[in-house]
Length: 216
Image 1 (tube, rainbow, N blue to C red):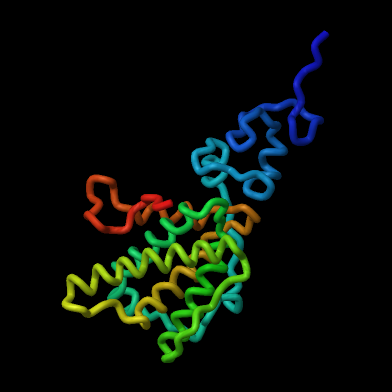
Image 2: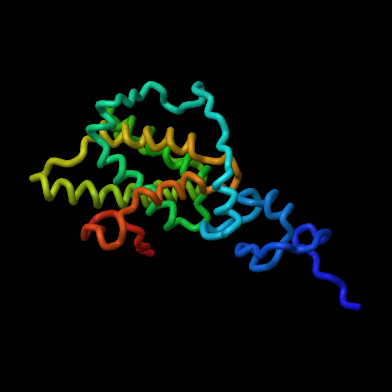
């Protein structure tokens, strides 16, 4: 008599669902426990998609909001709405082009970027680097994309480019958004996934505008 197959993770229960990360059937408890913790779940996994619909994000402690000294007024955000969207797109481009990048890496990269631009606003040339190598790679990619975007803006505006103060503000905004949108899982990408909503449809993308194109 041929024994029934068992879940390759726990080796105790019958597999009930296909896991695209493991490329094998696993049991439902292992799927739920390992989702974005020990399993690198792809965005299109049907069980991840279902879990997203019912996901309760951790409550954010106001005392944990990073860099509270950076005031983001309604007037500032209204004035820099388009810049915030572009910065969000560049964050997505950066995350998607660094293998293994997850929300905690974006958190470290954003903190380093905010500290770097905070120094620039104060007249100092000092780049903060995260010790996390994946976060550092995300930061590098973002800085490259941002430099290209700033150059494009300067060419269109007779040499006038985006002020460091405005970039500091929108980066602080996305740093706070990451805190609100991350699900707290070790390999979670809920924040990264939320950035897809900022991307224009392919037919509406302007030549030279930030897009999901890998330049590896």
